[in-house]
Structure formats: C-alpha cells, structure tokens
Image (cartoon, rainbow, N blue to C red; front, side, top):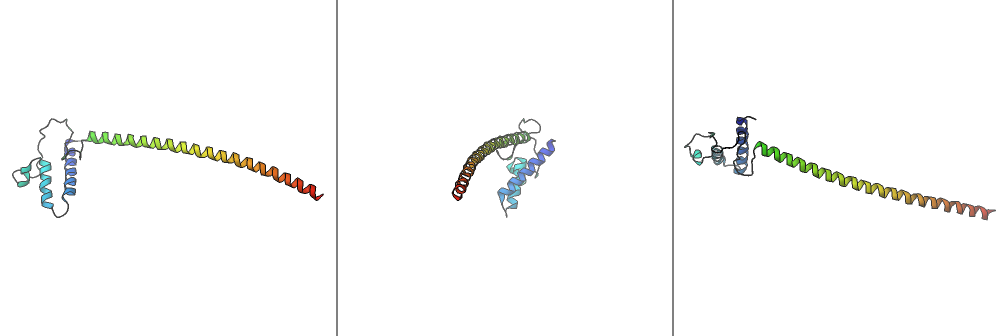
Length: 143
C-alpha cells in the first residue's frame, strides 16, 4: 500500500469515528473535531491553519505505519494483519476443540447404540426361545 492510501484510510477511519461520537445536530462541532484529528492541531479548528492540511509526522515511525487518532481504535496494517492472524488462529483452535468434542460425542453415541443393539438382540433371542417353548407346550397339550 502506498503511504497516500494509508493516510486516506486513516482519514476515513477518523471521519467515521468522529461522526459516530458526535451524533446528530452537531455537524459543525464534528467537522472541527475532524480537522483537529487530521491535522493534530487544536488551532486548526479555529481557522489559524488551513483545514484538512496533512502535517508531516514528528515521530520516526517506519514508512507505512499510520498512527491512530485515539489509542486502541485504529492500528497499523501490520497490527491489523497480526490481529486478523491471531483471531484466525483462535477460531481454528476453537473449531478443532469443537470438532474433537463432536467426534468424542459421536463415538459415545455409536457405542451406546451398539450396546442397545446387543441388548435388543439378546432380548429378541430370549423372546424367540420363549415363543418356541410356548408353541411346543401348546402343541403337546393339544395332542
């Protein structure tokens, strides 16, 4: 990404943040806050400095790193990528754990079904033998 694109993204994020913080009916105040955020100077909102002038950074940040308007709200592209990677790894870890738990429950369920089949087969066998014995008994009494 070019530095200009990063600055534009930073300005758009600042605009969005201040529009949300200002609410309705305070457009002029919101614009003044935005000017202060973009220029980094409180006198810009009063007209002492041309509005929306982008000042050169006073810090020695590596090229491509943009400072956020307020701490904790915006991050550099590298931090955003690291955060996305961290979130992805966390999501994958949770997914692995959920899949492991699902497989464990499925094995338990199948084992219960197999036990139930074995019990029902034994019960069926017992009932067939009982039926056969009753038929034999009935046939002997009828003779």
